[in-house]
Length: 196
Ligand SMILES: [Cu+2]
Image (cartoon, rainbow, N blue to C red; front, side, top):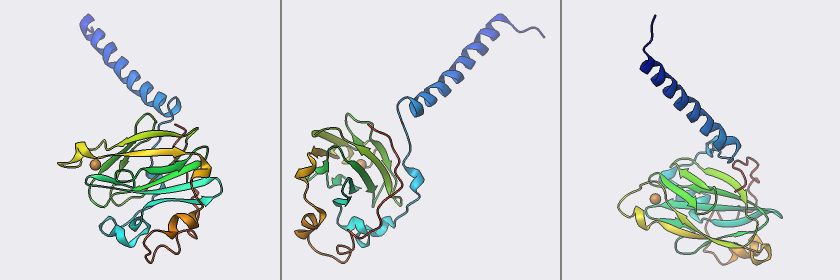
């Protein structure tokens, strides 16, 4: 069978595209450390976050070198993040657990490789370490409604000593039934996501 010369050129170009596409995905995973957050399989009733640990989101120490932050993303703010910044310690493993009670949101920490799609019904979890104190912006990357463009917040990385032990952190928060067992919850062991 005789294949026209132009036909051969187009076949070669389309093969190049396929190879380039696969190469870019491989580079993203191996070179840039892009991972997904969906493999913890931890689900949550997004219609009733007030009866979960996300009723009172925020940060806490679970071990001496492991800090966990619960964040709620909702139309159109981050809790914490928008009204008060998210505070995390430097040089510490920080695990974010992000949940949404309404629609799909984004959680991007600008200037890092943290860029997560927050799916309602899932606890979207990832871990990272910040080398030094810094201040970052947080933006929502998924169109989530009329106020989407105003959905932003702040993440402040502070020295470890600036974040008090969990007992002190929770003492001045309004009490509710989930409060007392927060510090006794099982430490998280599934850690996904790479260094920034
Ligand atoms: Cu949003």
